[in-house]
Length: 508
Image (cartoon, rainbow, N blue to C red):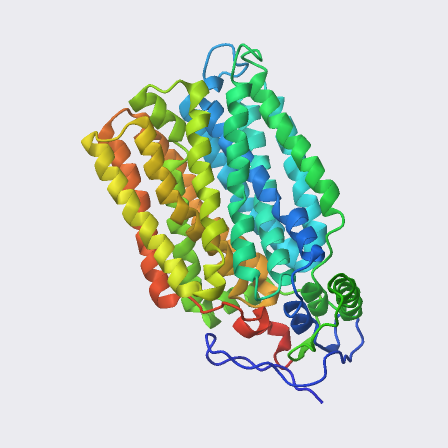
């Protein structure tokens, strides 16, 4: 008979898998029994397949929407402030107040939907959060008053924040451990594919020879709704996380789901799958209280909590130092017309996506600690150099964009690794809430205060103020890298249950 997995006295130690048969189970299945299963090991030993591509496309493409949203707002800020746009609003209000409200909505949405995700399941919530995003974005396109625009920017962020918790937890629980790092990074990095689309889209939509002044920006938001509807249709076929099912009294469903996936992959590959590495015994329960989650994150894993905060705060400030004031910086210091800033943004967005795409594999081979710390430190140091060159007047609009592109090649990889880190270093029952908490707290520090502070600094027209904005972001990114040097967890190619034993696997 298999004994439950006991608490790991050293959370960063690498215990071996529990021995035993692959598919035995026991218990009532009513949420209160004990269930012994090999489902986690069976998921981790699956080869890459069409089923995994379906997961990536159905769940991961939502970051494209987020990138589209944020970029469109940044690029239409100048146009919205022009007379005849249909809104009585200033550019500073768009890049400052509206951006801060969007992030505030994302933070609160992450916490609200994160709690629901851990309680009611990944699938229910990643359908609901996308629906919230679609409705709020559609209403943003219909804005006629500034308060209306602000309200629905908040609600759009509310939906997107919920997506971060529901999607990252589902992806990490469904992707095999051998591929988890690179897949998670590329999916989070796909935000920048949306940013490229938003940048290029804004060029067309802001061309008054094509669309009237008060119509083009509305169509930009409307196209985001169309893309979201397509994703919603694909997402209907994405499954619930079998790992979540195990914990919440649905062990038999988890067994059947994984069994059907195994049959599908064996047919696709034309060979039998190897035996899984071991099994785990869980004490099933319906829900976990906030008190248990808080004690787990901060009392049992305090070093990991510090790591998560450092990574999220660092990347949030760096990105706010650059991206929210991007169009204003180009227009103010280099005279780039508001309708042309999209070309420049498309270039740095490409650098942001290529970083995780090319470096993601190294997180599974070279390792988490080296790659997280090096991407954070390199991006921070390179931004310091960019700030120095900008302050000396040595840069043009083109060379500044090239500098940003290089900085963000590394920064985007590091920022994506922050989401990967907090989604894999805490127990399964706390996963969505952990993602939500660290995203909300880190982003609130850098993402709410950031736009408000940096909008004033970059919009003042003073070179010294903009240099200061760059240096704040660079310093906090370097600090996050130094924390990772000492506290990062060597999670590469390890099962989630090995990195942090589920709370339900402990003796009752």
